[in-house]
Image 1 (cartoon, rainbow, N blue to C red):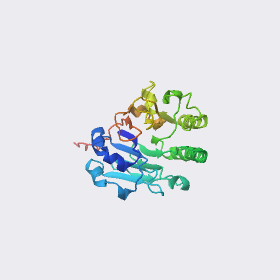
Image 2 (image 1 turned 180 degrees about the horizontal axis):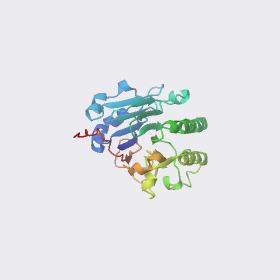
Image 3 (image 1 turned 30 degrees about the vertical axis):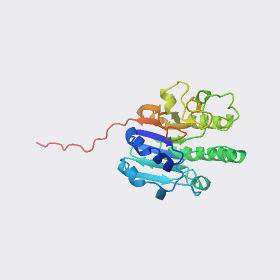
Image 4 (image 1 turned 90 degrees about the horizontal axis):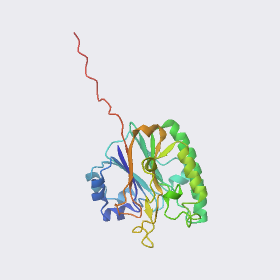
Length: 267
């Protein structure tokens, strides 16, 4: 199963820039979107379905043109979970999950901490999300949480760790939470395969940051530990230029299920 996560920074803008053509070429089984900034009825759904994704699920914020997550799938899920049941989280449209036979896939958009009030909100969200996932994992152990976490984990994940040490997204308290979240039972799928520096998923629009690769790795496909042996590969896809983020992929391999047993021959 090939899963891509992508903060599109507005699905309507991304579609105008060629999202559908990119999607057809990338050809994931499942794609998790963040920051869709649109309600279901504002999106050209027919184009998505024609691209091969008849199963698509959208969870928007109450505030128009803000936040929002979605999952597009070639495979029909067994169940769709909209939100977390935590009211203030769900008002901002930040979580959606689909459950398949072998794995559950969540699209997550963690808040940013752009000012002191939003930072407090982010820290509260992080603590409550950890409790939610701790409980969820007992029910659904095979879980992939894809999305924009708005946090760089380690110094290798940011172009200038010294100058950014007091900037939200790389604050010690944020990094400590993400480290603890991973240690609670998740694998950073990209770092599982790639230990090299200069691999980022977000660049500021200012100062020609993307061309100079002055970026941050704030987007992750975190895979629960029971799925360790199913990991096949994980890569960042920096050539997609539809957003200030780029997509990132994880591929899982599952044994094929036998559709039916052949009838036994009797004498």
